[in-house]
Image 1 (tube, rainbow, N blue to C red):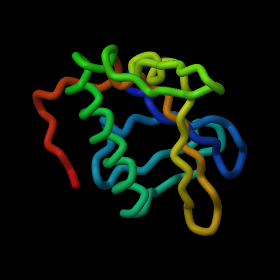
Image 2: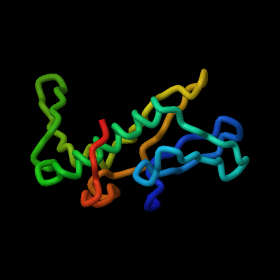
Image 3: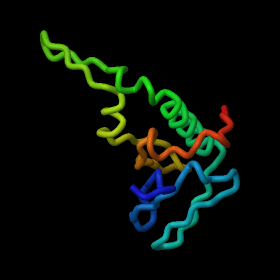
Image 4: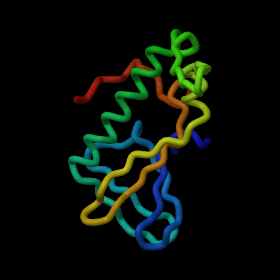
Length: 127
């Protein structure tokens, strides 16, 4: 995983991966495909949802101390299997499925929140 390259989606023109960081996006930043130079300008709703994901990452970082002790339980017949959240965060691929105009946009998380989230020193929650 590259530092500051936390999210990824496929270019709607050339289908090549475009990587970017929600932690470094400002309100006016546009993302450009490195292969075909198609410009992506996220609307306010997409930016709001990505900021909510940033808030989730920050909360996970704040909760890191208890993540190994917090589990999700799955029942397989009579048997219960407990999976620690910390393990889930490192093993599952997550996506945020949005729409950009009239086209679907699936943003893949290439991030481990407890490791890749920047320091909380300059963090201000955005609702």
